[in-house]
Amino acid sequence: MTITIQNQTFILHPSGALFWKTRKLLLISDVHLGKVSHFRKHGVAIPNNVVSENFKRLTEIVENFKPEKIIFLGDLFHSSKNKEWDLFEKWVECCTNTIILISGNHDIIDKKHYNQLDIDVLESLEIDSFLLTHHPTIKEGFFNFSGHIHPGIMLRGFGAQSLKLPCFFQKENQMILAAFGEFTGKHILKPQQNDIVYAIANDEVIKIKLN
Image (tube, rainbow, N blue to C red; front, side, top):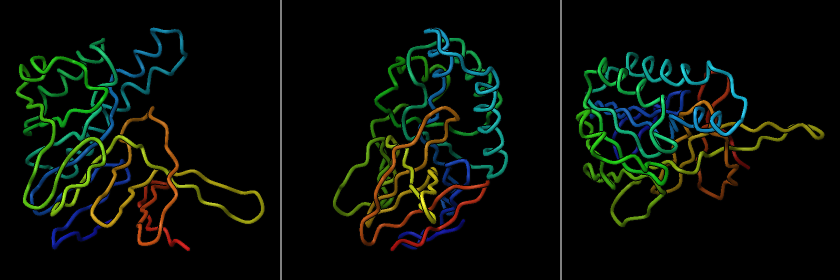
């Protein structure tokens, strides 16, 4: 789905990624690499294919948009380095794009390891009148793109039917991206007047009509 914010064109992708068409920037939030290995280490049974699926989706989205820069809006890794870091290194080696990480609350891996991969780690980034952060942030004069929340929307049908879907959640001067990771969960938000919700369902992004 293509939308316009402050005369700039953005494409919302069903993966949860957002492509800033004018700037050729790909924004991705909350991948949480290493989370599967972290949980399995503590005895939680999670299928092997979840790990490979994250890297497969990353590769597909980059090949689809061919961005000049990839900006991760925090929580790229879930915890300390584990075997998924080795997979990430290999993925970066095959990636010719400039990569920037906006640090999130889960990003505890030392910056030097990212720097060795030519990845800059920043607390936030301002581009024109847009502010890129991990936590949703209000700053006068800026439109904020962020993550952290893993936004979801509850849709209710007839009777007791209900459906929880990941979404892009837009307020007046802010958009919270859907979590990109395969194993992240959703935090259900309740839209207020003038909020805009773009739900992700069946590999489509759909603007939800709110009451």
